[in-house]
Structures are given as structure tokens and as C-alpha cells.
Length: 255
Ligand SMILES: [Zn+2]
Image (tube, rainbow, N blue to C red; front, side, top):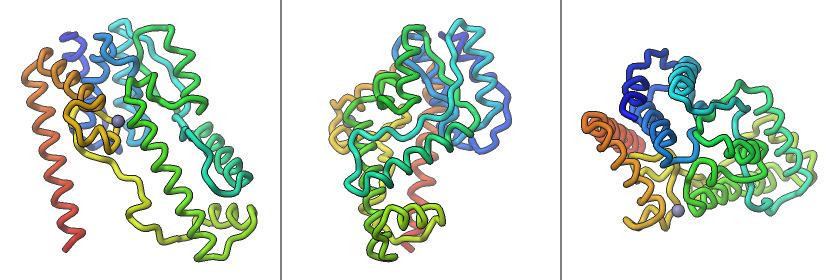
């Protein structure tokens, strides 16, 4: 595990959009957690990405005997249908599927071959990512719910601000990217509670030090400390720097 971490930390790459130091460190920690059997898989390149970092990770993980798989990015998983026009919802989903199909690949790193069908199911949107990424069901579910509530607020705004009635109106406004006012309460936001994981904990998990999300964060922290105290210190330092930057940004917004 230590030699894998050393190889990952020694990677040279072009940062491109991936400028978060903490995110890069946690990517490395997650790959080692996969090798150690503490996490089913690691997903690289969803959201903020650096192609050269992804390629570098792939080279190292393959050299260390881990399995890799390339897929298109993971589309939104809906645990329930939104409360609006079903035809519009079907159009939205197809639009997203078409969009991700055109995007360049993401990288999955995993240890056990048997996980492959489960990864495919998540990539096809048939299941959520909780099982394959080892995230708590409650947190994944709440994030899905917040995303749906945001979509519902957007459709309500199309109706109240633009008088949208038919499916065609909703499609036209979405295609035109029509501006709407959505209250902050209806916008999903990332809860920055845990520094060693890359998912946003649900409200219940965020508030309890014994929650499933907290347990995962502790396990990752223990793994980092066991591997290298210097690595763990680097994570703590990057987490503090990001928290300070967030605080500064919110102070600027309030001013
Ligand atoms: Zn949770």
C-alpha cells in the first residue's frame, strides 16, 4: 500500500481544471483504500477533471494490479420521478444521456472483477452509486432528493415566471437556458463536514459523530495515518486551507 501511495504522490501531471489540492490528495487516498479493500471502487474524472492526472492514475493503478474501466460520466440517478410533466422528465433524461454519451470517459479503479456489472448498472443510471463507491445510502439518497427538488423548483419558476403550460414550453425554456429565480433553500449544496471523503453527507449524518458517513471518514483518516503521517498532515493542511477559503468567500458574499 505504501509503495502505491508513493507512486501516486510522485505523479507529475498538468492540473488543468483540477486545482483543488485536497481533492488530489483524497483521490490518492481513495485509490489506496480500494487496493486495501476498504472501498469498492474509485471514480476519477467525474466533475472537475484533469485528463493527464487521470491517465497518470491509470498507469500506476494498473502497474499495481488493480482493475480499471472506462465509461462515460455517471448520469443523474433519480430515486423517484419528479412531480412535474412526465414527458418533459423523459425528454430531460434523454438529453442528459445524449450529453454524457458525447463526453470523454471517466476512469473507474476497482479491485474485484465481480464489481463490473454493478459499475455498469450505475453508469446506465439503473442504480445509484452508493454500492459501487461505498457511500452511505442515506447520503446518496438525500443528494438525489435535493437534485429533484431543485428541478421541481425550476419547473415551477418556468410556470410562474414564463407562463409555461405545455411540455413544449418547458423544453423550449430549458433549451434556451431561460433565467429563473430559485431561492437558496431550493438549491442543493455540498455539506463540508468531513475532510477525508468526496461525498456530501446527508443532514442526519452531518449532525452525528457516529453516523455511517462519519465512520467512513474515520476509516479513511485511519488509513491515511497508518500509511504515512506526513500524508495525513498534508490532508489536514489542505482541508484547513479550503475551509478558510470557503469562509473568506462567504464573508465576501455577505459583505
Ligand atoms: Zn447519510
